[in-house]
Image 1 (cartoon, one colour):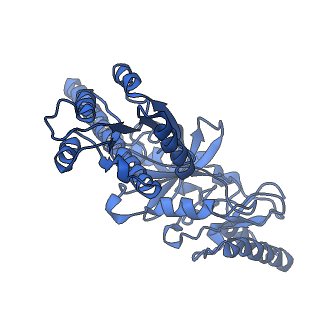
Image 2 (cartoon, one colour):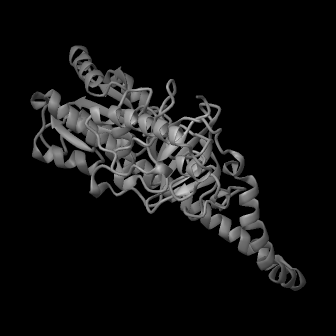
Length: 406
């Protein structure tokens, strides 16, 4: 999720509720957990906005049958189901049977656990699977909204074209091809920061230290730094694998809705909290953008997957990369800021390095002494990665990024 998960525990048994909260704090340390009794929860149901929490652990009586009037749990599930937006619910049944379990699932519960059989392990599995299903639900909703917005934009454009005069349409037809050709490569080359961001002759490199070799194509994942006092660099700096700093024509300036070419219909606000500025690289699996982070107030390198997240495939490739890089705590490893899924697309925000990569630096010429200096720094960076039990698998000059500070 883009933000820490919010979980609500509902139980009249204060001691049991605190037991649940304690284990949730241990199992999911980044999760915000609140505790309400059932009366407070009934009031909460009338006021919540849909963003108040992601998951509810509902401990209640479920009766002896689906039609049991004493089934508080089923009654509360029906009440939640009537709301326009509902959180995910895990039912913790104080009694009940197979019939009430089936009815609870039909009423929208993500899981049904007999309270007397609940263990920390079962709680952990239920919560993690529940949050994953909630995330998928949000992703589908965002994708639906995005499709709706694109449809509206197409309809508006069609209406504008239909209202245009024949003379205007003819003029547009004659002028469009030449204008597109002139504005495309030229504008990208002029605006690319890589065109004039070549490093100084003694700039220190950072060896790309991402273990996710299958993802380290043209977007240079994590980098182990060769600068003595600096953090490692991401290959998503001024250039990606396929785009060295000198190749400024590879950058694509984003100037409004619909210009993120590899994500059809995406605009500069594709990922919440980030404004896409420039496409600085791409691989078979992902596109790397220079993006402004609203929370941090400065530019980051934002890698966005080209394909929708495939839940059936298990851990996704950007998720694997994020997990691997975060496992290495060292100033020699790239700083990762954020990982999430938006509109079905994975994204990974990391450090942006405008100085470019070692490939471009080699093209400008290196002395033997400088070359040996770079080799020594790269080896030191890889030593950090290997000590963490990771293997890079894609070490090459385009994946060795340069820093400004030496």
